[in-house]
Length: 442
Image (cartoon, rainbow, N blue to C red; front, side, top):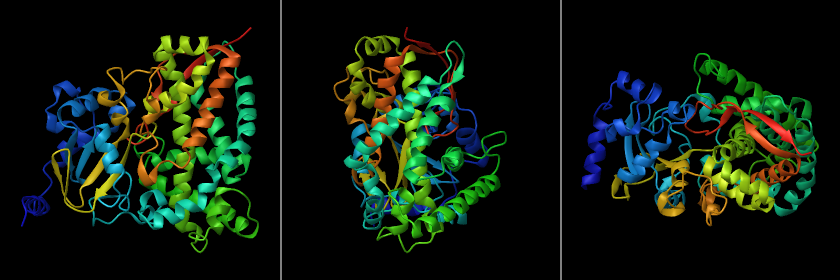
């Protein structure tokens, strides 16, 4: 018997190391500054760090002192926070050792039942080959080069219309009026979803990724489940319609794909939410992050205004700097070693893309900043790595590029005029409100 096996059996036999009160203080409540905490109490999964935009120092300390960092919660068991670039790539590139099949966000320990409404919502991002390969292939055509060429003019036309309709000299919310509007319009097109109902897609995307809390976007798990059922019922109608009259859209592809056509609509709830969140949250938060980031680093904004060709550099640099999805989870399929630490079978492993994208060893001492001259920005891990590399990456880049090409033609400046409000989530690194004013070119 190996030392690793002894460690695992000892752990399985004991109770959680923290009391519920301490767990609430560390995970669910406020958290101190990174420099003031004992190393073993640093838990970057705390959503308060993201809503308050205080996560930077916590990850910087872990990268320096403990880049493969163990936490343990009664609700989730053991989980490792992987914070350096090379380690994140190593995990993401080894699906046989680090499986997606147990889920892609933090969850109960392996073997603990998951609520029925969630356990049935499997998606191909939460699968391993060969199932993952077959189901992903079903919808891959939507992001093929020919599809992107067909969408280019439509995206530009809608972007122009949205930007031309913005008020000048008035404060408005960039998130709602631009980022959400543009991404939801495109998402509705990809699903061939009724445009008059398109904001349902935004709502469902926000609901499924929200943490239920009093006064929050959803106040309880019951409300969350109710709205997820509404989404399923809506798509069941579209499903039957597309079975009879297919088109070139994501619902039709799932309804007629060889690997998915015999599955009932309910079994596709996970894939639908994957495509909704993937097409909505990620791009919209890059759009909002680009405005906030360029205001945070005005010298870079000045360079962009002076040389609009820098949009080509802006796109990967903003996606790196914002990192709209902070992490993805994997689950160890066997005892293994990572960064000198013993990872036990069934341990959860969180790949913190957000931290890897700020790894000083890869992106330099100014990795926390936006730098439009960064020579390797395209090496970011915001789209993942390996078999789960984001299928819609080129579409996201296209939307962001067109947005800024059109912004630079119309506005002298987009000025952030107040503090942003941020998503209460450690998974979605995003914005719920960004007050701005625009000044048009004369």
